[in-house]
Amino acid sequence: MSKQLSNQANKLWTLITEPSTAKTYREALEVSWKILRETGNFLWLVLCLALVGTDWFLENSIAAGRKTRAWVNDLTAEKPSPEQLLTPETGKKLLDSGKSTLDSVVAAARKQLGLSEKPPEPVAPPSPPVAESSGPSVVAPSPVVVSAESVASAESKPPAAIASTEE
Image (cartoon, rainbow, N blue to C red; front, side, top):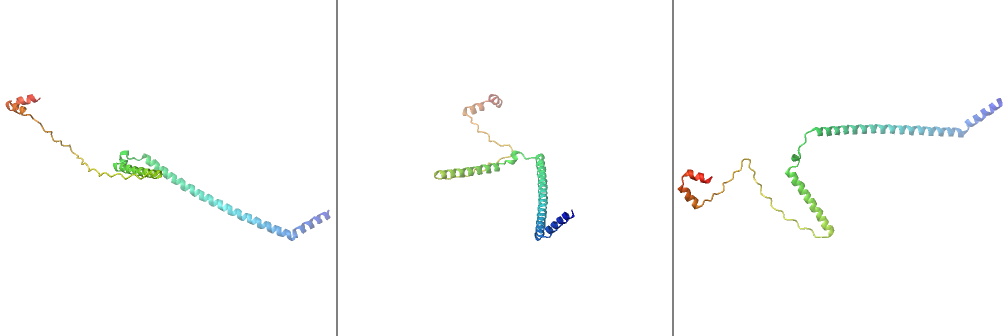
């Protein structure tokens, strides 16, 4: 038995002391070190990604909360009536922009069809502003037309009789 043990020990010692064994173990250690280093870099990047993701989530959560709070406050705030929002000036501006847009679309369509451009419409002068009075309006009485016969008959009657005939 001792011969088998010594033979096995010699084989093992020969295998360990061979130059290729040392080279193989050195390469294995180098590869293991590279694997550990790249794993460390990967874990560092995962940690950085987690930090950036958490920061992004927190910022967007806070912004969403603030927007929701502003929305709720707007719901409870008093809103101006539609009459206050749409003034005559706003209506005129909307009408003018709609007309100019329609004119440009029609001009482009006429151009696409090869038709001549429509001559611009003459602009009517603006009407003078009408003054509005804040007090009661005063209307001049209409003229009374009296015939000569009624005047003659009125002169011959006493004033009390004239009043009774007019009623």
